[in-house]
Image (cartoon, rainbow, N blue to C red; front, side, top):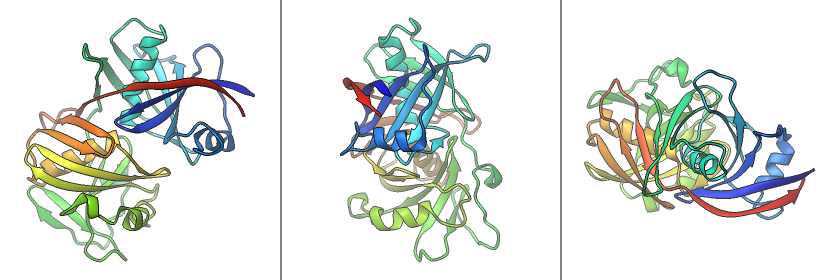
Length: 282
């Protein structure tokens, strides 16, 4: 199978983008893993597939596969690359498009400066929808939100939120020294999270600036995580640490996260860039 691809990145979070609008792109888990492999394939954190939508009022279908081969619900940095891709490839001439994921509909807007703003929808806090099992746990309240302990991880307290995918955010004094490589996978695979979880490590610099690292579910640590940035800012606002508009410094670049009101959507603005194109035999 010979496959044409486009390599893109958003704040260092990198993707292989495939066009499934003209003909179906149906890859097995092993083919996705091969494509995402940085030694034997193209190399990427996620593989994104662009498809036409059959839903009225929705322009495209947006499918996301982790480098491990499994399909997931959401990827914010990938969404920014998605809208730049469909616009540059002439698949649409609209600067604002609506796309559907496994469990959501997103509105993506290409700005004049080349950055992209994504309406990430409202955060979800209900434990059953994340999902998170808090049975028997006692949370510590701070501000208007809860910090939860996790068995087997002494000293770790996490704020739990979903941005269409699950996140557990912990505050650290120095994100550069945080034990992301060791604690990250323990949080990701913790039994309290039935579908695993993205583990965020948040350092608060001021009320409008933070630093963030994320150990992503099924991908490991990435240079940036868009949904992770949104989840961290939402948690920080609910806990009383942050204001409504926050600059998030990741290892791959800066994202701007706005959450104007508790009952409104989270808006994420950041870069999306083309890297190269090619073909691969799978």
